[in-house]
Length: 339
Image (cartoon, rainbow, N blue to C red):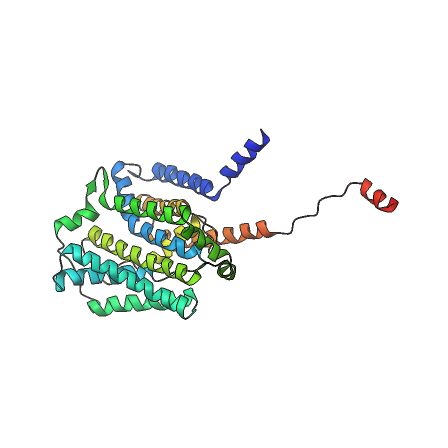
């Protein structure tokens, strides 16, 4: 009986269970103060507007599990959105081929990050901070800061603005991507190696893991998913311009860390990331319905990130704290003297 109670307590105190409880409180609160917040149309709206950030958060999860970071995903989304419009309008490619070419650009951009991090052994923070500016600068240069790509065909806009099988169309793509990333991280030796690298990169090398190749895969995968998010973003808004995805990297990192993935690497889960995405999406949408200024959402997102980082650090300290020595029985000193 005691064992079952301990197991139930552990489940209830898991990070994901606590976050799910917070998400439920968020929903109940905003449903009570915001008009039409709990309506079906608004629920669809939350799903539709959270797909791109959700995809970036999924892309960021394996990267952070390895102990790395990718600050360039938001800028890469903007660059890929602009190039997608360029491929379609100026190069005359069909929408499908323009999408394939855009995904290829994402893979190349992720490969650039991977080459600098694994080949030259540069810190991921510095590398992706540089490519963050590089990708955004290229998007600005291609459009000269004013060009906007519009008038996409209705068949393409269906991807971001209509529904399929009762849900917004892009949600199905998001769910397929989430399942694929979940299986990769939680059900393959490749995914388990991400955690091993995050815990101890040198130990992973001594264990025979190809650390550089696994790291490269994580950043290339992030580039591919960022390009996919760019295509969906363009379909949802019906336009592509250089400022697409501005600030999205902050929301993605916040969702991953809020979901329980350690910023130092080694621990975390994809389902935790999904809960983090849901918590941020409900917060942003709920504040709009509660008629709060948009700046409040940015402030609360920053506070959530700081709180999640602090909670992760405190929990790590608690697990690694010195354990008190077990008390000795009164009979032990007498036995030692007799010996």
